[in-house]
Length: 501
Image (cartoon, rainbow, N blue to C red; front, top):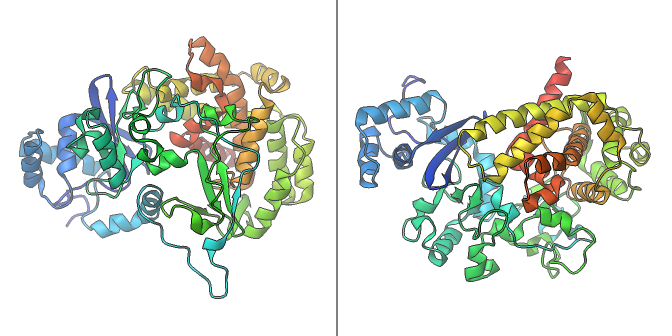
């Protein structure tokens, strides 16, 4: 078969995420290609065709199946629709195994987090069982959740395993009419049906099971069935889990206003049950990331895992920098110059002032990403959608900071929330959250740029007349938007720009 020919039995590729959004009462299906970041908006009838394309039917069979579900279409129109998707690279190849293999690592990680039990870590002969590794929880932190649902209003992918989805539909059958029909409330986590995990629809950016309006609201599943009625991801949020070969670091994602509002407040809920002591005690469905054996610490330079773990402990014990953003930039330069040394940590403790020219390329790259996303969001997201508004605020803040005098004035002013900035860094260090797609030195600069944007963000929330409770903690808002909506890819843009220059 020609590689350009439409597959005989088309289905959505595994690298495409289908998400149902209700803007007011209007239903929209968004296809998100995770390879390119491109979005394609579908209507209900088009989604009816696509959801019937499970890889077992030809186009005529898809049309018949879709018609039974109230999505009638002519065969010729369906053929043209699938040809358009195929041309855009959104359909799986004829060899389903090839497509699945290409995306197996990502799919496995998602499924482990949401549904099934991940395979136990491989044992090396003579090595200690990883399940015996102790849990090392972020010290001196407990969570005070205000129940207003900020974290339930900003993410498009809230995962349910089959049992969780069935329980949710039983408890709240009236939500989107999903009581008897799973597909009315959920779309596949990845690709097409059947799949291991499902994603609940969102209304104006809010989880469909979130009660209330605007910035208020509580989880209706929690209200109806207690905390156990919520999906695992919601029950464990905002905790993160990383096995670094010595222990399982349990930290917190600083992506919700409640996290920062909890700083310095005793008596809240622990990140995990204090009775749990080792990795083997954790719910086996929890996704525990594994720190690789070698970690990139600077472009062209790597360190072994044990060296990085020891260094991170020294950094966590260091005296806080007078200006965290400046300390991060100074630390990045020191890591590139001398590696993971005590001298690099000393540079963090007593940094030089952060120069606007050093930060400007990072802010410009973030502005380009945010401005593009803001234009895309305006075409389909509700004006009440927190993600749409937050993207607009980030785009406006980074645009304003392109003015050198304004950026210089901001950098010379005291940080408005130094305790929040210090905690954000402490949580990132403890949870190895600075390690990922970027070498460590570039990730440090990325975090500095985020803090500076968060310092400016309240001005633009105020200009927009926003009284959303999420605005009370701008660092958390920036963190959630960058990770949850792909804006963190700006750092790769900044790196590419630096290489080109």
